Length: 192
Image 1 (cartoon, rainbow, N blue to C red):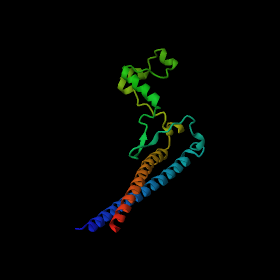
Image 2: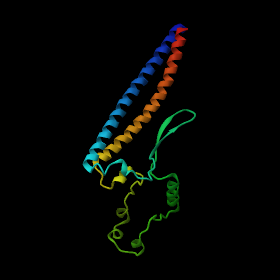
Image 3: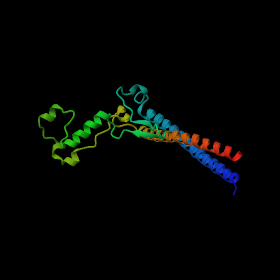
């Protein structure tokens, strides 16, 4: 096969790779749109069931911190979603790790009744049954109380899934630009 035939095959393969990436981009875009629509619908259902005053922008916690961020690698240009695992600020997470390294965990907030040495029902239970997993203090669902409507939890899950899809869209868009440049170079080489 001559050089012109190889260049044409290279152009064909790069165009097929571009079209595959475009199809994946369109699928991710459709699924993220569907997740966002369903998330907003679940949010509307939750507002209707719990009351429009109870779930509103006015209930926003003033000390809220983000639970996810986007990191972009400067060298390779990779885009990834970084979720805070424990929901703590970095300095708080370091303090918690230091407390675990010491072997003794101190309570952050002691009540006056805890210092009196009361024998409550919780002290009679074995330690593994009396300890509960601590709630994430930065979880936005806690702004609305402990018993939030299930639709609000569903909306939160859908918005988190949509965020993952949107980051995937950004990755695919960068791949599309790269594949488009490769296809353009391959087509120019085939013409020559």
